[in-house]
Image (tube, rainbow, N blue to C red; front, side):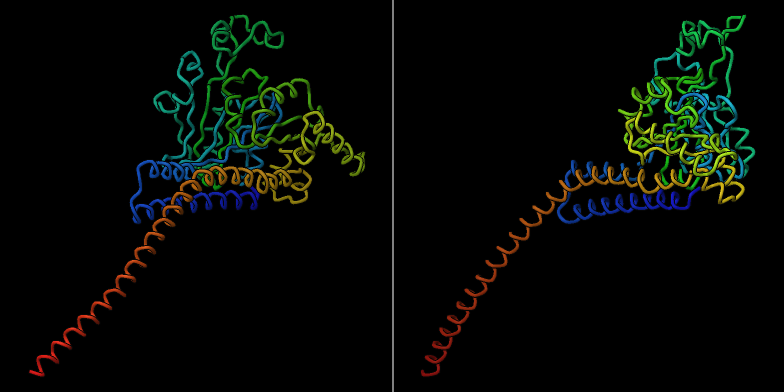
Length: 412
């Protein structure tokens, strides 16, 4: 894990908490000064709560077998000394998986059975129904136990083809899927519809949420569920194969579901090590990589600075072994820098602008109210001063009158 990335996420979290505390203090000050109406109380409480609960959501999206899960392992979980999330050859993540940290609950893996697709409840509703989920406890101090437990994310099950069609998990009219039908009339489908992983990792504890999606053209994908998370993500890492670049299906998914909906999108050409060739000079290899990057940027209509060439597998190996040279060559550091110095600041600015719009209205109202109160106090002070002057004149007149009366009395 990059120290810079960890520091930026921690700094973002600390600033959010300080700003939330300042807003709460402001509400208390308003109440002490002259009371605060219910509407203002609610608005300030909602703003402070939004700050405290805000999550930086980064989604990893791609077609089948692009290395999304391996990249997540390399970016965030290399400190385990092994792969935390299952990432073998072929399809791995069979259901959308949300990784986060909630200190109010013990570390666990929660799995929503695929059969819930027959029901009408939304995923958001099902998330509030713990009884519907299969829960597996996780031991953060035992990486192997976690590794074995998280392999459940790759599980499939045999299902009657007619049921798979009903749930939108298999399309017998698609030539690319027909071969999956067995002689007994069953097909393999994902065992789980959605998964959440509550894990006390420093980045997750600081407010980062990671979304690992199944391959969008794989049997394990649930398109409507997978694609619904993209608009809610603050950044999307869209993975492509280095050797093929942007395929027709890659471009279709990008144009329909990523480019128009993501707040901040990045293209990642993974498996750059496939181009490493000992029979070519470093300059020749780099020229090939640059051509692929330029072509990808052109096709996806992205700035060159938003396209990266990496080897997630080599990056993970380099971090585990402490191989600095391989880590640099893997290209992972450029992606970590982007997350730390562009994605996080972009989200921070977006959140702060939203908070400013809400709080500045209240501050302007408070400022106008204080100006009016100061003016009233100044007017009252002037009146009191004037009254004080008049009182002194009356006292002098009374004293003179008393003196005259005294002199008259003495004369008698």
